[in-house]
Length: 450
Image 1 (cartoon, rainbow, N blue to C red):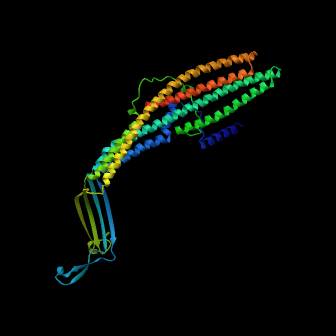
Image 2: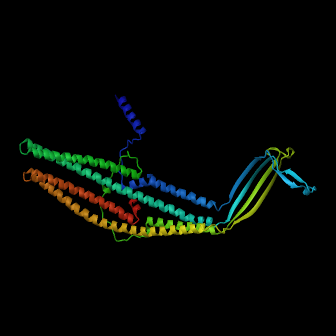
Image 3: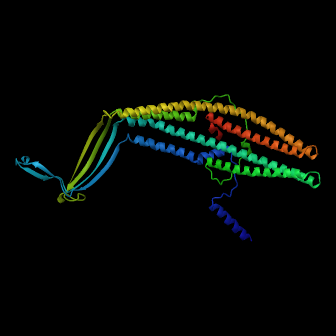
């Protein structure tokens, strides 16, 4: 019997392992750990880090244009029919005659190395100056992506908590209503209550159970959304500690500096890059100067030159050249001027985006500040209302047991108590989401990792 139980356990363990099912209990998931997990595993966060890496390679590519360009070349040519040239016989002491002569050899092979070095090219120098700005652009973009991931995780994290709190309230209400049902049933069995009273409490109990099932479904959907924004496998079990969901007042004395917001910094860095792009286009007006050099080895003969010797009629010779190439633009149909003007339009368009973004960021802060203040007042009111509804329910229940209140009064008191509790949890959720918005508007989302 023990061997059968052992084999059964091992079979389950191996099956769970093969299906990727974790057999370890779920660990408490704090907001900090959820954000940390997301920054390490969410695809958006990973891709932004890859963009930084890609940016470094782009910088290296730009720098390569200022370094020597060295290439090797080789060729092998067979000429089955040599070209015939017509020559004046006078050059060979036979004036008035024409001589037909074939030049070249049946086989020709060559190999060489060439070098090109930029001496002056304004577009290359502009690219080198833009390298630092390019690196900073990708770093700021990565920071913005991380902030977006943090915001989504925080909002979904709090939403999951609220749904779980609502389920806990319904569970508690279900237990209390079930007790009332048992009391009413006992009264009905003893002829002290009407059947309609028992039916009403049974209907209420059924409605609460239906609400519980709906909330459970919402919790699963919300948890799946949270796991998605974290980059976590959907089948992972999570536990959210209750202490993570407390509304505490926030100091609102400091006005944020909009110019320190990541969104603003990214646009300003993009403006710098557009300025470099305009300079690179204007570089087409400037001449370019390059140093070129080459060394080559040429073999010719009636046979394939490879591995052949002079006795076979094949001769090898080397030659080299060093020079400077200059290119001076004179007229290109106003193409460069048009591209410069396009670059100006791009810069002006972005500057309008920067102005609009400053207004938007300022609006975000003002709205978040108003919401946080109003929601905190709402929380205090709903908390008092919830406590009052609880007292009313307690007194009504005692009065009902003593025959001083009707079942209708008791059901109304229970409904009012449940609604007050739900209103409180919704108010706390609204406050926490407004809190995230306020932290974001101050450019301090990463403080949620502390």
